[in-house]
Amino acid sequence: MTHNIFSIILFLVLISQGYSQCLLSDISVSQIQTGIKVQGKLEWSVTITNKCPCVQKNVILNCTGFQSIERINPSLLRVSHGHCLVNAGQSIYGDAIKFKYAWNKQFPLKPISSDISCS
Image (cartoon, rainbow, N blue to C red; front, side, top):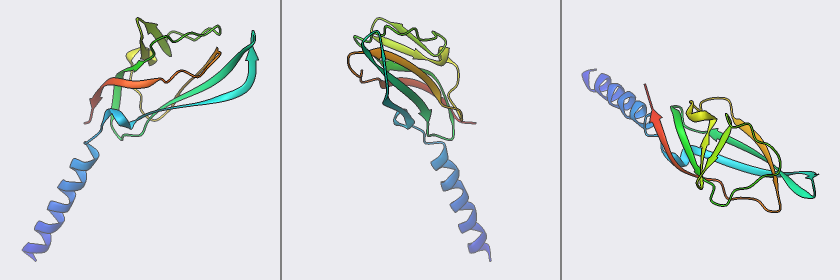
């Protein structure tokens, strides 16, 4: 009986530790063409999600050379010197962050840093 209780406790501890092991790679950035052209440029729809059960904030993407002729709400994506701050540094958890941009090509918006907070 004691062995079974110990096994159950150990199992629960291992599971709870697994959920707190979030990584930057849990931030997913997907892009698709909308089929719309804005001033002759292709429009891209971007969705940023956090696949981790923990909150990630201050998410920074590498967006070197990023340009858009379509205005992007700076509270969703703020571009500065080749880096992009997502969601004004606020938490990404649950709801996806979505925006659109228009340019000749798709930019590789890759996560380069975030602050992970598991409680």
